[in-house]
Length: 130
Image (cartoon, rainbow, N blue to C red; front, side):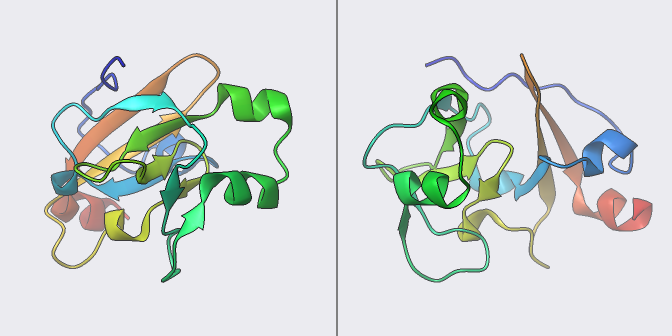
């Protein structure tokens, strides 16, 4: 699986960083080159704000995604936990990946038709730019 392509930027508050489908994760919880892959049966996550596991198949059904949309969907692997997903690109992050007061760097993942662009930023500049 190819690593997630990274593009570095110095600002967080550009309009595209707050567009629908943009996810913000704690960058220090992921490897330097996050793994982007297609989802597969058995994948699971703890969606942001929840406490229990949810199978991705159930989450995708709840989101009412078509079969074509599901086939194009990409996920970011949760490091060290087989089958666990850190993020469903364009839709949800795992609760463990959320930005907290302890976060030092953030990762912004933007979904698009042909590319996934990620930016690392310090949370200090994120807070300052809000």
